[in-house]
Picture 1 (cartoon, rainbow, N blue to C red):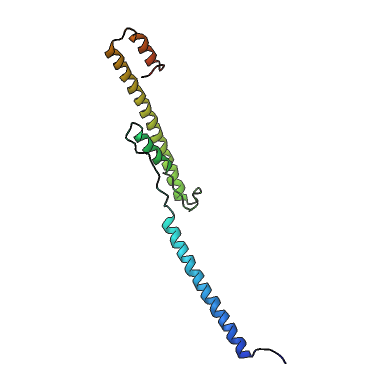
Picture 2 (picture 1 turned 60 degrees about the vertical axis):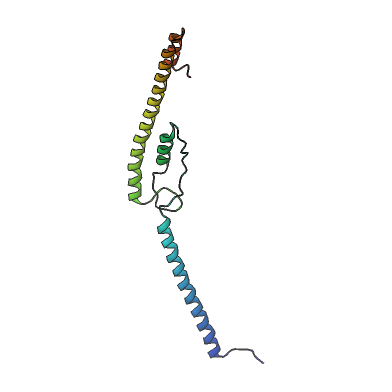
Length: 146
């Protein structure tokens, strides 16, 4: 006694397998299209950065430093250096702008330090203390602060 299938049964099974494979290929193509659409949506998205917005003299520096840290672009989801020539060019240009901003930050910090020294000089001059000349020299030399 042999257990077998007929030619019609065999063809029906093969037909079911082929239909299943075709449906899976179609679903795979749909999934790849969905993936590509998601890549396009998230290509330049990054998480929002946090900047301490405490109202003090350092706020502009914190904002500009956060800006500098987040200015370069990429053409991939992994944050790797870009391969796209346009992204590379944009980053080169942005790095030049970032150098200018960093230099301005240094100048602002130096001006703020100078203003603080002048404030201390005025305070000492207003109090007219006996040893104000000695303290004034220390302040101007950067040795003593309030």
